[in-house]
Length: 320
Ligand code: 13P
Ligand code: SF4
Image 1 (tube, protein in one colour):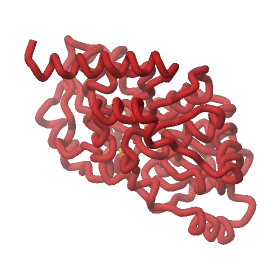
Image 2 (cartoon, protein in one colour):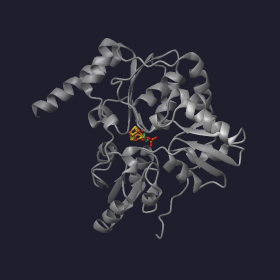
Image 3 (cartoon, protein in one colour):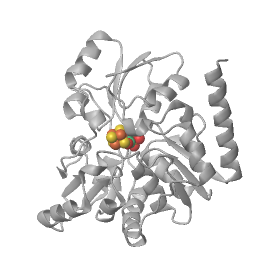
Image 4 (cartoon, helix red, strand yellow):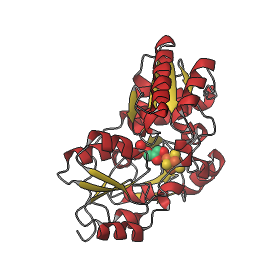
């Protein structure tokens, strides 16, 4: 075993011991570094992580992900301590909307248009929203509302994806994920040509024109299920690079190719094992939300968690 691997294992062991001593749980998003995913108590997509944060008995939650995820955990579990090992792990998409701008938009649209807010948003923005959604339940959430017209914010690509599966009119905010948005449809088309036997799996944060070329569209956790169940041997993956770690681990006989080498979110990669150890030893970077905002944001998250969950819509590639 190499010295680097030895060191990694040692650090991982140290962190597991610290977690035990502090009665803590480590949650990791599917885009985190592989060595962090490997020691998490629970790894998953944004929906699964928020469900886990709401249900856990642990007194301390160490959140390896980005700020809005740790904030959601703090909103849902006010009596627990939530640590974010690196405070600068933000989400540029979440910063594309503010509570003030959302209030102005709501005034423009009127009271008959409920706001469905992607969890990739700040607590203040959630507090202004009727209900939250994630990439895995956006269609169920939109369809659970009585209104004929809804505003889906801040991701316009997710809103346009939802529009394909609902009779309601979905208005959108012009935000986007800089990592997924850069994936050009031409790149996906070229990858399809290069690997004609491969199945293309894409995240709904990608451009609609890129999704048109995908065989399957789903959340990050949906990709694990798809890869496991599909008889295909090769997959082109249109989402952030971190997902490859578990895909490859769980499917050693299948091949996974990232659609574009730039599909890397710098914020998701900023957290290291050393940061996790430091946060745990020093109880550093506690995430809190002012109570008046927390209660209103929790209402939007609770409504999402209680919304009936339909089977995710079946995707059909354009011209397939
Ligand atoms: P999901 O894991 O919910 O698909 O979210 C993707 C994402 O971009 C999180 O920042
Ligand atoms: Fe935000 Fe995109 Fe990074 Fe997710 S992948 S944290 S949406 S910038």
